[in-house]
Length: 155
Image 1 (cartoon, rainbow, N blue to C red):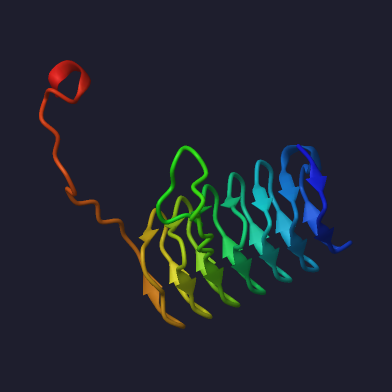
Image 2: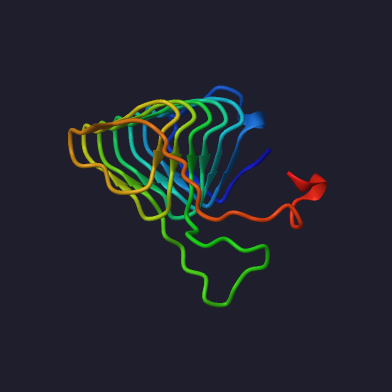
């Protein structure tokens, strides 16, 4: 996987450069990046640690001294469609300095995670997290129900 069209400080440690996909991004000094990370069109500050399988899409801004756990996914499209819509608008997330995001968390479009905030593992962050706050959890609720006619096998 390539590292292309990016400004990666010479002190950045990428554990396996052949196993990451970094493009159109800026990564600050002393940041550590594990294997199977994708960073595209984003800005990552200094002294960060990004664990394996993190997904950081275009527009995402990550401050300094930020920890991003394994399998963290940032989203930048509030209403994704299969085909690119003409009215598509990137809604990137922002993570401020010293924040921690636990493993397997999902950060929805446009969310700001405040300075010194902590996001517990497996969380789905749907709104801004204030400075110094700790949030955790995932709340799935029924949004729509389909009859058995629409589901294969009638479930």
